Length: 434
Image (cartoon, rainbow, N blue to C red; front, side, top):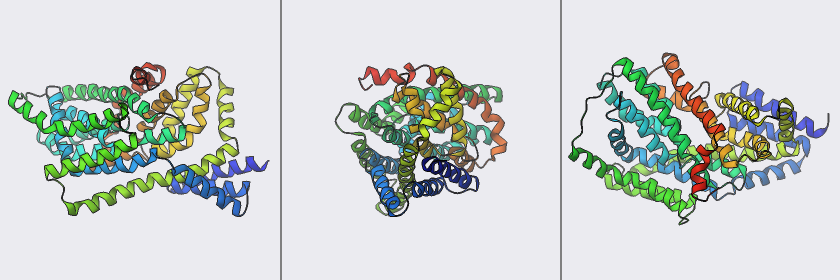
């Protein structure tokens, strides 16, 4: 066995063994990559290369958007913006079966689109709407599954932190194009959840008789428009070339902070706690990017992506079957790994394969992100699943059977996004971004 082959084998074995023993994913990647690098170039050279790759991986202007969007999401959650978005969502969904659950789904799409975090959306909307839904007689299980299943929509509807990570690792992929590509798949996911929620509501007798007066509608819109304007300002500014995605993220922070002070939901003394929470979230993401930089170098040096490509192409040359195989692999990976490290690991492996037959990097990015978003709803990692269960105080085994119909329509949506490029590429191409 050659040195490079041994290094690649050692890295893979260490990563999977440490993960099996419950090590944090960042530590597993770091240990495996460090051991492999030491085999390739023993001594001080391994340390020098590690330092270089860590610096190169985070020396990105695009990545600077992540801490700002994380902070903007936390400010919105604490500053009363989330509650006003719920009011706007109720105007859309109040006449549908299971009106408050439908409102929850629409609110997850709106709030997630602003914060870029599915977990933040599920926790914020669950905390606001959960008690209201209970008062209407909805069961805890129904409330939880509707909130949890729609939580990941915010990871696809821009701005999206995971798309920023993908843009960085894929190389020369426009963040603006990725953002625009996320609208249709994200809305498709949300609409699919609304259909299932409506069918469940009819069977359970959760009907709505609420009627809003014109005065109430105008007041709700007046309260919600300043919050909704943030989407227009940030995304419109990026598309118009007024500022970059990173500059847009900083503007999102400033806008959220000003609104929160105007609404008087945040005081100066609250800011250190909000900022510290954002720092901790950002540190986890950036650490993963750092260790994945070393891993990416080792993978390239040991030709792991090429070997995986040969193995897949050895099974079949049919691109539709290859995409199905990739979907299955990513769905399995998503069950055991958070989206960020999964994107960092598998983008260099799968992207070159799909590009051989001309699949656009933006289309593949949406397919990958949507796949990994499903993993946020499944154990053993399932960040949104566990956060939602904790928010609504239900056990996973209580809602598993109720999540299955949601998984079915989400899987159908995923297949549509995979095999119908128009769903991802129509908006970016119409805007001249792809």
